[in-house]
Length: 101
Image (cartoon, rainbow, N blue to C red):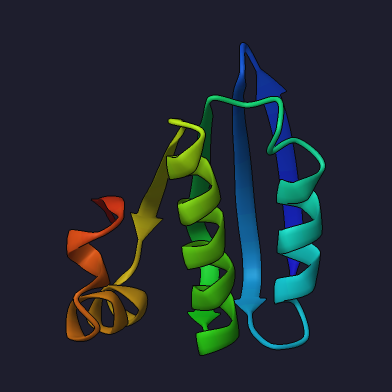
């Protein structure tokens, strides 16, 4: 997985490429962790992300909870059909702010 992170005006945007799985989710967590205390918004771009495992979903949920506590926002954008199905079947589509592909 490749991650591209940019921060501007308190907003961190991370573009994910490849698979977010057990091996790569710690990398996403680390990238988010470097800015989480400084940001008011996080945008995760799934345009080029082919797969998200349960480990990746755990990182998303943990990040969401942390951001919610500090009254910051989190948005998932360009979410494809495969990940959409997972989010809908787990009812996480009602938890996260999502922009579908």
